[in-house]
Image 1: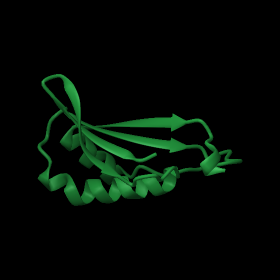
Image 2: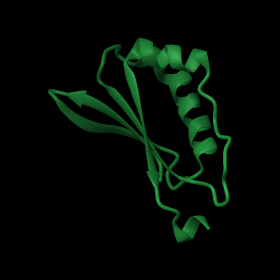
Image 3: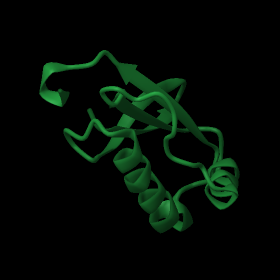
Length: 96
């Protein structure tokens, strides 16, 4: 999948940016998400209007583990009003 960065404008969510196109690995997606947040946060308007939708597929045979949301990343997201959605998709053939 990918990561969609959306902004809520007049009550409607509008796509602003797409990151990590065609990446399905949650760990790689979180690295890209963290990089984007830490580089872009100073330019974002604070408020409760940002949505980051991270679409991923579970790793084949996975039974635990995964990325960590650091306190610093969570603090920046909270300060900028970034909500994080995790959209899990069924195991796809291209991810096998």
